[in-house]
Figure (cartoon, rainbow, N blue to C red):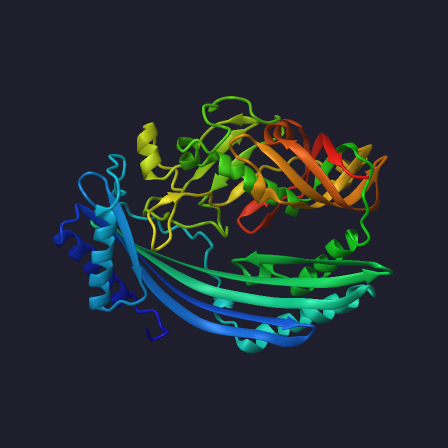
Length: 453
């Protein structure tokens, strides 16, 4: 590896791997190549902790036989001997798999010239001095934002540029390039005997969309909001999830719409296409073509064009998210949601998953709550049982009484069923924002059982 992308060499290597796979007996084959340059820097209590700059390149080869078996292998070199090894490993893995008549390659197509807003030359042009300045700015802002901040545990910055090539025996040869940058701050705050650790981070494809100063202030604000949180009485409360917490909740809900989970009996929505499964306030869209989205790309892990799919409209289940295999099983077209590691075979994943915003401001939503909790963190979302919908989650936030924000709340637990939560969504706010590749806004969920004091 030279540290500089050579597209010609990458194309020749990928084409060689596909050709060798066909000559060694594969019925079809594809290859995905990724070249990345990454930089990261972090400070702990104002002192440099870690600085990393480097590049990587790797290629994954997938082989298919006439019975639909498939196998994959990855190597970190474009050398012909290593590519030969990758083909052999891929074919061996293919032979060890079960037959699957639904596995196939995407037909050849030509991507449009539409600008998806994936690359920002300002990110590619950053130097070490600028990264250090961003981290210093975050550290200083967080340290001075509140006298209760006793430690800025981390002020970190990261950025990178990635180039992706897809080549297949169906005739495809396609590239795209994307850049990302992100910053984050974690702080420790203390008041009397109470101590709280928290933080906040942001990520974007546009350097101008990131504000290290605002990130630091938000990290302190969110941590301060729950400092000294105590148990509220056990009872039933209206919950208002802030946009970040709402995004983490929607991210978990998105798993229910993956066609792979539907076919593997891992989703409580199986058999409910066309049914009302949430309140009319809930509309969910997955959009792999969203300009500037962190989950945006011209094509997915199978070389199929990405698309925009409404998966829930006014609470009604409208569609699943598909790759080629599951689309063929259901007799529909792929939605371009194939996810794939270089060493694995394609599965299904979300791209940019979005909760459609409403019209109410957060302030108006709070004024419509008599007895509730403004939730700034849900703990344990990964433990939700996607088959039964049962959950038990920790809650941190701020008490709401009579339409006004009150004291911090911590240590509470909510338990119940995911379907009940979705049906109980009453209000959706206008404060839409992205947390990673999930876009959401504040939402009010009525009458949720919570265990406290």
